[in-house]
Length: 389
Image 1 (tube, one colour):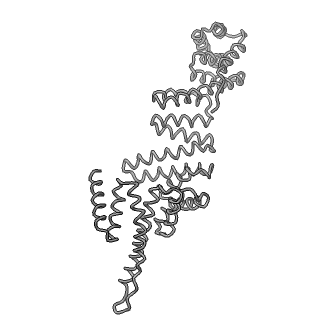
Image 2 (spheres, one colour; image 1 turned 45 degrees about the vertical axis):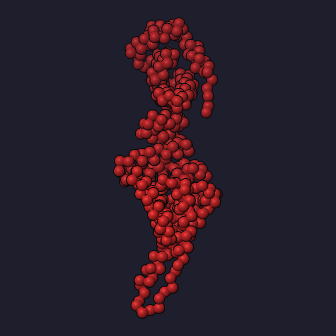
Image 3 (cartoon, helix red, strand yellow; image 1 turned 120 degrees about the horizontal axis):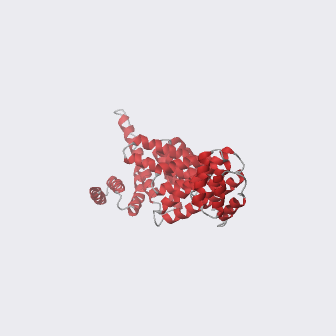
């Protein structure tokens, strides 16, 4: 992060005085210049306010008023006076531009320091926001300033303010990966709030906005794995499964050793009842990380559902057979799928012993495999867990 020299503002103050001789002017302006040399800033401001009240077209008086207000740390007032001066003339444009930039730097850096201190003492977040908002007023085209202000807003739980500043940051700089990604993450907060309020449609809309932001960051950094995972999830949650699946398939091809991509692709295939492909992806994810409990559980589910589908197809074929015809040979391969499912569901329970849903799945599988004692024990434990909740 760029730092600014401590002596920058003092140097600027010297420039003010060197450029303000005793040229012909009003009595109020002449008095103000004298007060400035004597560092009687309040009296200097009073004289200049009298002058601009009499003549609001006096560019020199507005410029001097800005200089005085800088000395008294009235930075917003300084900025206002400089704006009035520039609206009248470019006579002091170079000095004003230089002074604003240096002060923007000091305010930005002070804001960052206060923000970092806010992690230990939350009240410092307020101090950081004061500095950042002053910096925005001084340099309203700085995308970075809006971004750090959004961080402070978020720390204060002002999520709407954070979103507004992130949107502005992206308008100022559409190539800001950090702003786009943070905006996507923030949309998740809004989506969760909608879900908590039982507003499913509103949540889907917020997830769609998250996907849009993550897509922006994806276009900027297409190889960022965390962002790809976020975009896939946002597509899925916003009912854009086609986009999610295409992105997941592409992600696996580009980074086949990424367990999250393998897992996400497996989930899509499982939903589409493409069980062989789902089994392959979950197996690959577990090869990468044997402790990946979600992959272990879903691999068990894939085998289980695969077996159920084989059995259902066989039952349907038997029912549709005409009476008197030769009986079809039963396809018993479903039993093998059930057996393959068992160790993965058991492993999942070991990793997540308090997961009542997982225990219920395992209990049903035990029953199918004619293991009544284990089935009964798993059902009883799942029932106890659901009662506690």
